[in-house]
Image (cartoon, protein in one colour):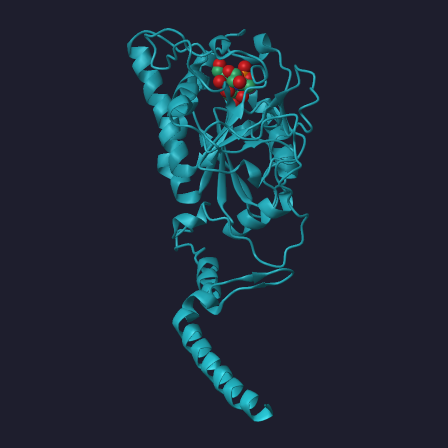
Length: 369
Ligand SMILES: CC(=O)N[C@H]1[C@@H](OP(=O)(O)OP(=O)(O)OC[C@H]2O[C@@H](n3ccc(=O)[nH]c3=O)[C@H](O)[C@@H]2O)O[C@H](CO)[C@H](O)[C@@H]1O
Ligand SMILES: [Mn+2]
């Protein structure tokens, strides 16, 4: 009995092991790519190599320009070892919608973790351009805008404020953090505020072509009559990010949005169409995507002028027209531009930047609205 068991069993065990070795040899490739993740994630050697390569990809040429498109964003790579709260699939903001119907984020406080977002974007280390205009009496807003920008706006990132003005001597000297600067660009004075507002598209197009294109990866267009109050960070970065206008984001039916309604204008949006109403006081994105959009607003307003029409809200109308067809990659909640004219409502957990109350009559060259 004892002898029988030993003989046949030894044979079976040997055959079993031989088969096992063959099977292993055959499927070896697939076995190595299985990741065993619990506390520690074991990354197979080949994948580790790919990952290192990706980390090394963030290269700039002699002009400081990114070599690969991943420099701008796209790839959500985070260094390992970072400590942050575990994300939940079940809890989050339930009082607001955090996604659009074309499935991109609608950014509110509580929908992102600053630690994770910063880790991803600081590794890319993008150069950010902020284009602002301070023409005529609007130079008075520069000091507070830049001062508070240094406290809250994309802190820790390379950033240049391109201040377009007709009063160079009124540009204040504000202490700036490392990697940040102010570049002054001269523009002519204007007799109508409408010309300044629309002129922004023309002058910004030209500054991008001559200067900014060589110096930045992202670009923001912003009104100057605003003050930062809280973090306005890398969560705002995307190919194209637009901000919901605080006046129309909650219950306004689309047919009541102040879109351009005259078919003669290039900014025309007919009844029954539209997603949101976006403000033109804060918008940003990849340099080249923003260039295309700023230039579009300029060219469309030129066509309108030829046809003796001016869109109801100038470049804001053209911006809204463009974004209806070319959906933004991120929509930012009105936290990203509130107004001191309005009471803060419970869904706005944090006001990141707010428009100042101003005397339109006094500050604008031709007064009024
Ligand atoms: C919150 C919001 O939706 N803002 C929009 C609203 O602006 P506002 O009513 O806030 O207009 P505004 O007076 O701030 O003008 C827009 C910007 O143009 C510049 N400026 C204007 C006049 C002037 O004499 N000098 C000068 O430098 C300055 O940067 C200013 O911030 O309507 C404008 C068009 O009508 C633009 O679409 C603004 O983005
Ligand atoms: Mn404004």
